[in-house]
Length: 253
Ligand SMILES: NC(=O)c1ccc[n+]([C@@H]2O[C@H](COP(=O)([O-])OP(=O)(O)OC[C@H]3O[C@@H](n4cnc5c(N)ncnc54)[C@H](O)[C@@H]3O)[C@@H](O)[C@H]2O)c1
Figure 1 (cartoon, helix red, strand yellow):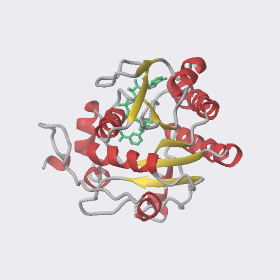
Figure 2 (cartoon, rainbow, N blue to C red):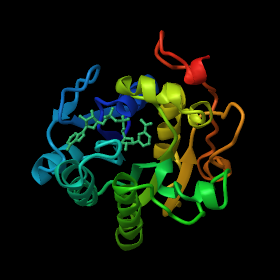
Figure 3 (cartoon, helix red, strand yellow):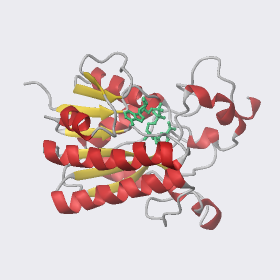
Figure 4 (cartoon, rainbow, N blue to C red):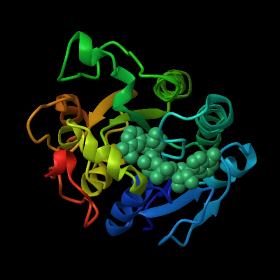
């Protein structure tokens, strides 16, 4: 029997490619959706999140949706965050509901508890107060909130993963300059396995927000105990496993 369809938005991106590769390697049926073509995936829609009809078509027949497509860090609110992360989440939630999907996995961010670092300090637990870093993180809080509303109102099972740092190709210098990078690092292998576990977790979970990083090198910034309890997932990798060859390492190591 063919496996149930999983839609992955943002399938051409850094996280998206890790997720698509892991799901395909496990024999899952995957459809991509991105505004640019997705490498390595036959069933891939090219479209924009701001086009409600394109998102609805992509979600048709999906049992699970992994929503990654977004502006992935702070950027101009009116031209980037608003269309991609706010209007986009509206169209995605509606398309997921109309498709009758059972599970939605949202890519949130460790930045939603940013200022908690100075209040309670690490490790940050998912239950800690939401203190978003800025507009990008506030949009992630919005996505988590509407995800919880859909779980309560429409019976969709929603898991928001507050991700550590899986650096994109343009982030080499920034990654190298940040002391905590080794501790919040999220390897592509662990990213793929995390999203697979989130897709497959029991549908009895109505809504959960969980942290997800690889194993920290020295300081535990994010508590992963709820992730293990609910999803049965634990990271395997530790910095620098999975970093592109030739990357300079944080602190010059
Ligand atoms: N990489 C990380 O360390 C990290 C950490 C925390 C959260 N996240 C979240 O994970 C998700 C993926 O991030 P990433 O690092 O892979 O970024 P990325 O930029 O590599 O990938 C994002 C993808 O989304 C697509 N996209 C953006 N806007 C779109 C739109 N309007 N319509 C269709 N496609 C659109 C882009 O073309 C791109 O392929 C994002 O939601 C990001 O906020 C990433």
